[in-house]
Image (cartoon, rainbow, N blue to C red; front, side, top):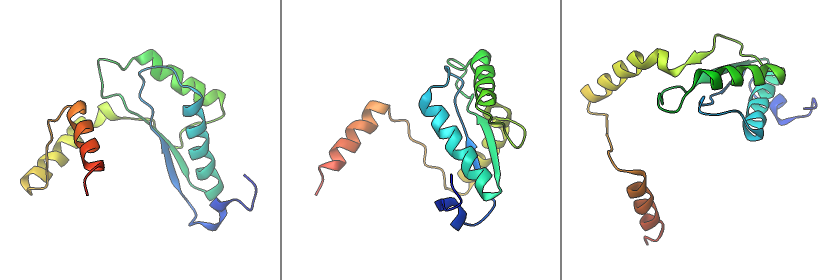
Length: 127
């Protein structure tokens, strides 16, 4: 982006991140998203982070994670810190959930996606 881009008028030092799930190979939309985040971080003097959303063991594959990192490197994009894997932090998330539950701030939902979609469609027609 040119020096007159909208990023130059903002607070310096943005931290952006790209968080793909390693359930398949990257596509053009992923590349555009990663490049936008990386560029915003660079132009603001900030940092770009990579977080791998690998908490779906049934669909996530190590070869897809490796391909994601390789493809980003091919684009000239690297993380400005260690790559963070969601699966490495499940205990942290559990502690936070326990804290929220103890404070009465956890509102679990066991609805299916179909039920949520039906509810959303009905709400759209509400007065």
